[in-house]
Amino acid sequence: MGNRLSKIYTRTGDDGTTGLGDGSRVPKDSARVETYGTVDEVNSLVGVVLACEVPDAVREILTQVQHDLFDLGGELCIPGMEMIGAERIERLEQAIDAFNADLPPLKEFILPGGGAAAAHCHVARTVCRRAERHAVTLARETSVRREAVKYLNRLSDLLFVVARVLARHSGHGEVLWQHERRRRPAAS
Image (cartoon, rainbow, N blue to C red; front, side):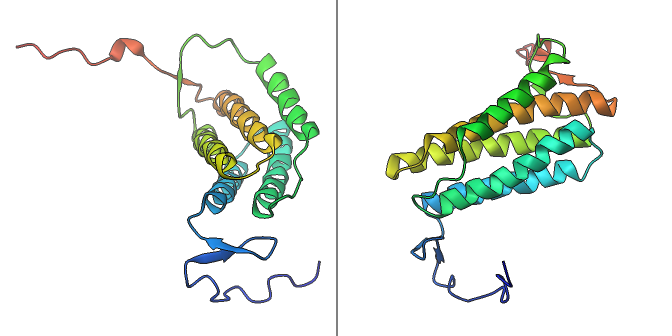
């Protein structure tokens, strides 16, 4: 691999553009850059979850996810590149099913919380949903492989289930939405 980042600043982006993996330049606020930049945010947030104490099975799948997200970012950064395949989506689905099998059925909505690791996982989930929305927007402009959008969709599901696992693991438990607390009209 060599010394790929021998110089961190290049000044080539000072004009508001950035280079894609194929050498072309696009505005830094283009839909493509927004999409792979948000995928990078998800990857960073998964790293925050992994900086917490988590069960080994969670650590294993989320470490794989980080590698997948790096590949997905590359796929989105290099038009025409194919790096995320159906097998990675299936792996997410298998992990969701395995983790979910040990959880009680949901009867209420869950609020983000349940300890630091679970709360961080909820943030990663919401940013993953944003990445998915950006990928859908990008797909209206140019070709985006269905696997990329499906991967983000399944990943957000996995992060939800993992947040539930982490809330229980931490001993904090899940924070359930209390619909009875809805705002009542003020007395006159």
